[in-house]
Length: 157
Picture 1 (cartoon, rainbow, N blue to C red):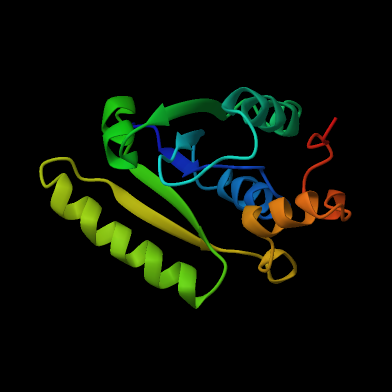
Picture 2 (picture 1 turned 180 degrees about the horizontal axis):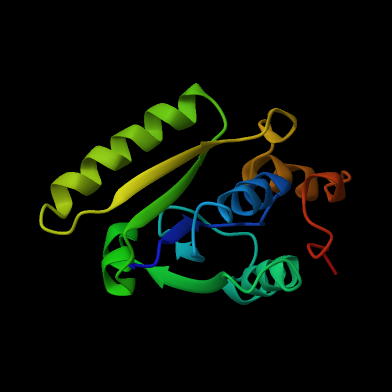
């Protein structure tokens, strides 16, 4: 039987409780989840990939051995193809996310017509639906208490 492996891509700058929620819920659906830290050339990241990897590793260290952590450059669909996965996992917080993710789904189908990947959308839990890395970074920059929106492994030194 073919293993159900999903890539969960993002910048995770930093990982939030919203990301955590999606991964924990998706573990019931997949044999393995690859958390893929993308290096988005359009974004200036607040934290290094090394630090983000460390936080993600520490977040999921004791949760499951079904999680792998990678980083990548370039297109997510190319990373999925390289890893030979069949599923792309995406979290949806609101209507804006849905419209954005829907367009990416269609683009991926046109980019890789021979390589079929199924995109699985999970809606954020109600109590986590407002959390975004962007807002967490803003709280950090302005000296607010960001710790209530991120896993306990995410602490700024």
